Length: 276
View 1: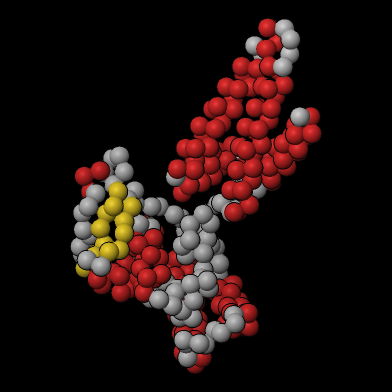
View 2: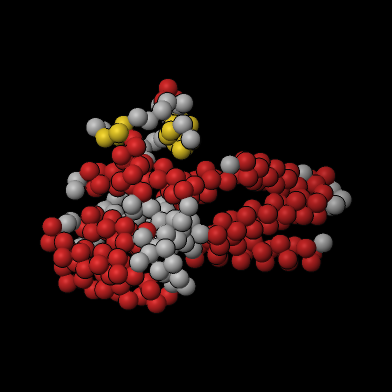
């Protein structure tokens, strides 16, 4: 029994250290697995400690097992809730960590705030021009090589007429030309192009064959559930899909559809696309 305590205690400490060390970016697989290990080891520690205390001869010592067993029960209930909806639980845990993370340690999670001048943007674009073909296994499988380099030069010539958000989106557009869902411009915590800020519409939507529908409007907009989206501002939804598709990586229609609806609820991207 003591060996079990040493093992679970070690797992508990390791998971706690990992959670603390990853608090700057609590969105990856390692963080999620660390939380799971933390909960499992904490439950095991509580149960084992409770059992050991119950083996004591005096009644008052046996009563000390109650807090351990209560903790184990509560942690087990929490684990079940988290397992029922991993998506929400992951977001909840990440937000909880962010609230207790000192402001000075939030460097990796601050909104993308570009302050690049023309020279710096040119350096970044040239870096993309050189490094993407160098590191991608088949960069020109679906893309004409000349089209790629022409798009790079066109963007460089347009820098003076575009703001930072627009330049970031145009870089996304060039990368999406490769048609590879694993080659894209992303930012934490969302799998979206990096912009000045991230503001999401409080909706959950899905792209069905019959169109794009709201599947959940949340507690405050429940009346929107099952509604079909026909327009975004004055633009028909078909036109918006066609425009957004230019900025979405992916080699097949189903993947691109999934990515498109992610962008639809991102206010900053929609606003930027409307601006030029």
